Amino acid sequence: MRLWVEHACQTLAGTDTLVPPEGSKEQAVCTFQSEERFFVALVDWPQGEPEGGGQARRFARSLAAAVEQGGTLDEAIDGMLPTLPTGRHVSVAALQIVEGSRAALVECDAPPLFLTRRGELVLLPVQEEEIAGRLVRRCHFSLQAGDYLALVSEAYIRARGWDRRWGWRDIALSMRRLTETGGDAEQLLKALVRMYRRLARGEPERSVAVVAMRVRPLRRAVVWSGPPANPAEDTRVVERLMAEEGTRIICGDTTARIAARVLGRELEQEPRPAEGWAEVPPTKRLEGVDLVTEGLVTMQVAYRRLQEAERPADLPRRTDGATRLARLLWQADVVHFLVGLAVNPAQAADSAGQLPLRRIVVEQLAEELRRKGKVVRIEYLG
Image (cartoon, rainbow, N blue to C red; front, top):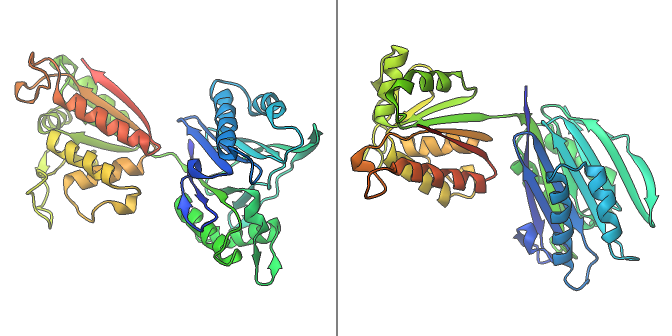
């Protein structure tokens, strides 16, 4: 079972206002994710340092680039540590996870990673060394589905609450309680931010950064829209669709009829939704496929729904085909589009009638999904 690292990150500014990590004056959080790898770096620059946030961002991005280009995390850290300002306290934590389970962690003068498993705190067997006056901890370990992790900047563990200063262990024990009942990475992030606000009594002295993570099974979705240019390929494409793991979606009436014919199954119209069909055409039901919608109009509205939402909870509470499509795409981690290149003259994007409009709409959907952290592949069917 392939695992996925679901993550959410935020910076809490000294004014007790949530801002993106890029907006912090001291910290930077940099992440990248593919189907195989997840990486995060949290860099905390000294308070009051000129251009501290910019320097933190440059360091985090360079570290991420070194790992993304194929280097190991240890090699990337060893190459980057000499570039830190001499005599200045800079906190760096970097984590790389391969296939959701094989993790490598490096912490340089940084608070230790928080890890809970099945409601219990996990203490990692780190190896410590001193490099140029900096304490560097390294660890390689395995993760399991259901694990929760968190990285925080130094100011987080220095908050004073209930007439005493809290330490790493106090916060770790609180995180264990926060994760006992489950929940996603976004919920864990919000809980950690709320806890810090209580500890800081609503008046944070400086900005803090928080990264929350949850390990869970990878979610896939495949979307087929449009017949292949060569009708002889119909059967092969349907077989490809049905062989895919995860959620199967068809967008397009002609596409759905091809699938029903090849599969020898009935294509039935679904009941009218409460909000009716004024904006989005009807959906259909086909055994073995999770959602069957009309094509262009439905995909265009789904694209708009995704654009207007910052999180899944922002999607309308509706059951029309476009909202259901947007919700299923957002729930997936990896989305595979199968796009037929057969051209309906009434839906051509160019005057020569050679470019199907669905191709443009799918590419817009794909770009929005990537912006939301999804891994997206598009395969064109000639």
